[in-house]
Image (cartoon, rainbow, N blue to C red; front, side, top):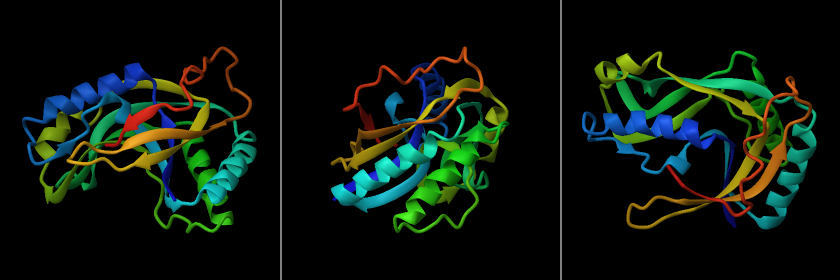
Amino acid sequence: MVRTFVAVPLPAELQGQILQAATALAPVLPQVKWSRKVENLHVTLKFLAEVDEDRLARFGQALLDRLRALPRFRMAVRGFGAFPSPQDARVLWAGIDDQSGGLADVAAAVDDVAARLGWKSEDRRFHGHVTVGRVRDGIDARDVLLPLADRAFGELAVGEVHVYESQLGRGGAGSTYILRCRAPLGARHDHNEGDHHGDQRDEERHQRN
């Protein structure tokens, strides 16, 4: 059985800017368990939980078939916030500015592919974000997050979606992510857009946030 999730990866420069901003908040909000490694940062589309290898292979193939019909798009990372609210912060995040609606379309397609293979459809509205910290008991983070509410971290061209295996860590070290599948999107809106993910290795490992 493989613990698995689906995500949009981020370029290293953008990851670094997000982590730098989160690290600056750590002394102010010591209760939060912050992401500590830049490679932790991504946009989760769906958590698949424990999956056997055969089912994971079927999901990967179905995702490849579905996503090649969707166009590549651009999105931006902007602002810090929290779930369920800054006043009762339990998950702290950098937000996604999805002006084209491309990320929402991809998230819906991932959910549909999963539902066709027996996973439960999401019952909450998709809210694209990059998790930077978690805290078990809610805290009031309004004063800390307000200055970062509109901070622009940068834009990226999204050309593919990744399926990761998550191997749980020990002793607070977090989990290791192993890339199991790449699902490229279809035709580009802008033929000048580069694909910044093409040089990543198939066994790329990530530390879970």
